[in-house]
Length: 67
Length: 355
Image (tube, rainbow over all chains, first blue to last red; front, side, top):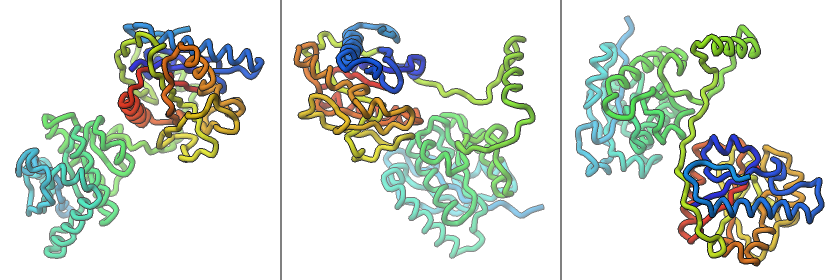
């Protein structure tokens, strides 16, 4: 089944063979940003998950980074 | 000239000439002298005498690994008590090539013999043999080809290494053709890492063979899965390697080199919180994840998206492990198991989050 990998280190994800890759914010907070307000964080998080959903719905022939 | 090296050889039913798969459940059988490839061992090394052969069915051992090994030890003790001349200096098992069951039983027998009798044991396997994961550290395993075409070479290796083990010499994977045991040996290099790195760069610039001090693992590729036609009618599952677990880490998932993954319920949870969950990952600063675990496992926005119809359904169980120093083999195994579980319950897509 399709899997979207939301991750901080895209080269690692590519090397280990993930096919649908969504770059995240940062290692300690991939789907958040403590510098921002809670509302802004939620927006950021939502944006990344929506990107992941797009990746899941996209036909691909090889590894692709969705950013 | 030292006396003969007395060897007891352990082989499966096929190499023992007792039958094929149909004889897989064969209990341990004892034969005086060599059998099957044992004869070739004696030809290759005149100072080796294969004094006895134990033949066991692959399934017998695979299904009762500990019991089987114990039975073999008991069998050896009985035969040696009967005839002291059988007391071996060395036990040789296989070669098992790439065969998983045979590799497991060779591994179990060698390990038991080493532990019980304190005598050296040697076997041979192809680097892909699944048994290596379990026995690599405890045993000396000669590198073999994938199948019986490599019989002679494997036995030659086992003989060479066997001699060294009996003589109490150190084995070096580079020169002795054994599979690295994953043991670290410190040594003093004559030049610093910086100097060796520059030398490596110079070789590269001159177009010479660069070499490597550390061979990189090779990762397999999986063809991309077909996309979900419409997430609005699909079931999504969440998986994370970021170590997000229920507060208290009920399954005691380790913060590095995790030996397991957990399955946790999301029922009744609209979002994760500092009270309900925590991160046990030892490879990043977990302050932000502990303050708000949704920053690693985005339950809150996924719930919103389900309510809005963008996602059909969220599977109410999520899977978590710690992706810190996790061996590739283990990670692959967890992935396979989790995928099977998800497929079984009709999940159609996964979001995997990593830190």
